[in-house]
Image 1 (cartoon, rainbow, N blue to C red):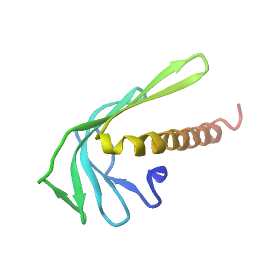
Image 2: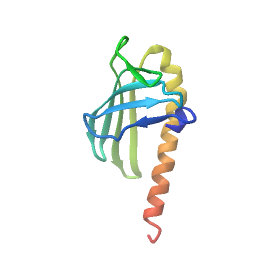
Image 3: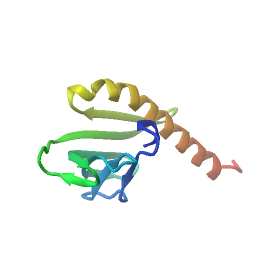
Image 4: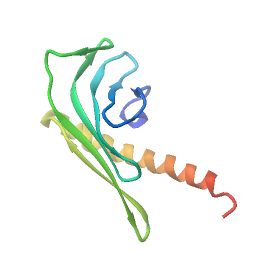
Length: 119
C-alpha cells in the first residue's frame, strides 16, 4: 500500500470472501471483498463503496475490480494486473500501479533471497 500514499494500509487479513478495506491514515478509503483467491495464481478484489471517517458508506455503492494474476515463465514469475476503475481515477492508477508492482517485486525478491541464502 505504501506506493498509494504514505501510511496507507488495508484491513483485515486476506481470504476469499473476506471483507477488506483500503484506508488512508485518516480512516478514509474504499471497502470491498476478496472476490477470488487462488494461492500462487490469482487474487481478485471487488471494490464496493467508500469509507468515510472510518465508516463504510452505503449511499454511493459501486462495483469495480482489481485483478492480480501470476504465471510462471522461463525467466521467473510474471505478475499481470487488470484494474476496472472510474475514469477520474485512470491517471492516478497509471501513475501509482507501476510503483505498486515495483514494491511487490522488491518485497518478493527480498523474501526469496532471505529464504535462499545457501543456494
